[in-house]
Structures are given as C-alpha cells and as structure tokens.
Length: 389
Image (cartoon, rainbow, N blue to C red; front, side):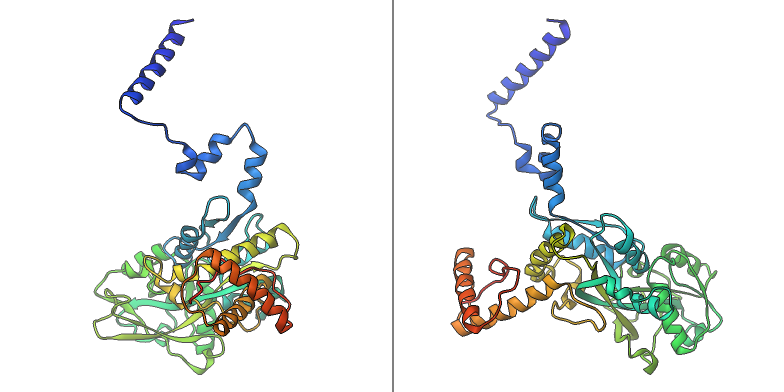
C-alpha cells in the first residue's frame, strides 16, 4: 500500500473512532433532504430517479422580481412541495404577455399567472384569434390594483395628458392595462417601456412624469418608494371601464410612505388568473395538472394564513371568469366537494375527523351518490376536506 493509501485508511479510522467515542451516528441524507437523496442515488439508477422526480413536478411561470406573481409562486412551492408526491417549480417570468406566450410555446411550462384583460386585448386587437380556446383556467386568484405613482402636481390620471409615463416592459401586462384604460378615458400620454426599478429612479430625477404598475397590493416594489414629493394618483372608476375592471382603493396601511394617515386613494383592479394550456385528457401533462389541482385545492386554507401574501385571502376557488373555460379536473373537484359537503350536512357531521374516518365517510358518500343517481367525479376528496363532526 502506498503512503497516500495508508494516510487515507488512518484518517478514516481516526474519524470513526472519534465518532464512536462521542456517541455520534451518521445521518442518512435521505432523512434530511429529498434533493440529497436524489443526488446520492445518481449514477446507480439514473433513469429511475429521473422518472420519479419528473413524474409529479409542475412548472409555474410567475412574474418579475418584486411583483405579486413571483411571491405567489414562492408561496405555492412552500406549501405544496411534498417530496416525490408533488413539486412546484416556480420560474421568474417577465409578466402576463410573456407568460401567455410561454404557456403556449415554451417546453416544460405547465401553468402560469396571467391577467384576465391580456387575452381579451390580444383578441380585440386581432393579434390572436380564439386564443382563449387554447387555455383553461384553474382558478381566479386575486385582483391586481393599478398603481400610478407621480409627483404631487399630478392630481388625476387626466393630468397625464401629453406626459411621459413608464408602463414597464412590453413583455408584461401593465402596458396592456394602461393602454386600455387610457384609451377608454380618452387620455393621450407618451408611454415608454422601462423596467419598474429603473423607471422609479427616472421619476425621482424628474426625467419622466409617472410610473404605472398593475400589481396586487401591497406591492413590494411600490412599498419601497420614498420621496416627499411622490404620491399615488387616483384612477376614476368611469363607466367606460366597468365592463372589464373593478373598483379598488389604497389606504395608509397599504402604502404609508405614499398616502397620508386617514386618507385613501381610489383606483381600479383587474383579475389575475392561474391558467394552463388546454391539454388533451389522458396525456401526462393533463395528469400532472389534475394532481396539482387535487393537492392545491385541498390546501387553499393554508395559503390564507400568515406568513403568506395577504392577497391569498381574496382567492375564491368557486369564482367564475366570463369567457374562460375551467380545467375539467378543477370543475370536478369543486362539484365533488359541494356534493360531499351536502352529504356531511345530511349526516350531521361538524367536527374534525381522522384520515381513516374521512376515508370511511367517503366510501359511504360514494354509496350515497349512487342512491342520488349522481355519477362520481374523477377526483377523490376524502383526504382533501376537513370534515367537521
């Protein structure tokens, strides 16, 4: 044996004796991290590991750094990731328009967050025809408020007539919402496409007149804006906007650096949508999405508690979206759970049950459905509902 070999053997023996003397035991990487487990298996069973890790991984196109989309993506991964059962892989995106393109064309993208007015705009402008038929929606998420930040000399959006206004990059959805709103209000501004952080710096220097960001409040980027001469500009809920937008407000608690205590600022909002490509049933992509829906819908209550983004409290799984078709497994899940809730009410249950009791109840529920002449849906809600007795 070489000198090097003897040194290695001696070092191994020394480490082993030290561990034994101190009562230490080796830690199995698999007990610490699913990622470490996969890495340590790499080489001996690469195909098996690859198939297993990809089988239940869903990729989500979110949004730009500092926006609400990217925070929602992080929240989804935090709550839903569960080893080999499901992994949500958020991708930092470029906004609503780019997400529409990525869902349609980018390999590996399963779902994305888009703004409801984006597809309408693409169709009305003749950029794409019947584009909604290529999409399904899993759920409406929350309403995104229109933030217009400008110097205090700008008292309303109408004061931006002829002014230079930054509307983020053309890959996002802010510029589309801005174009629609300004056209309907009859305001002609000079739109420039500048990334929000750079635009805010230009605003402070007086190089532009306003910055628009359509994001869920409180927007992290907007919250960080400081400047005694800057404020949020009101956006009137005019009749011309009411077909596609909703009324909204900001107050001091939302943006204490931009709104005086006790004051509020009126604005408008547009729904954000968790959308997917309209995959054919019985495909692997369809199956993955169905599994994602089953796990996500079952845990919706977890998202609506701290420390997750407060906008989760706006999410209602049953909310409809005019002109959109809901992903069928999502619709089945909602229908099944509505029936299950009706069954439980008839049975007089209103307390928490163990998983075993839920399974037993679910079997009784299937028998009840047969008696009602209802064809069971595809998904099983037994482990997904907190039953109350």
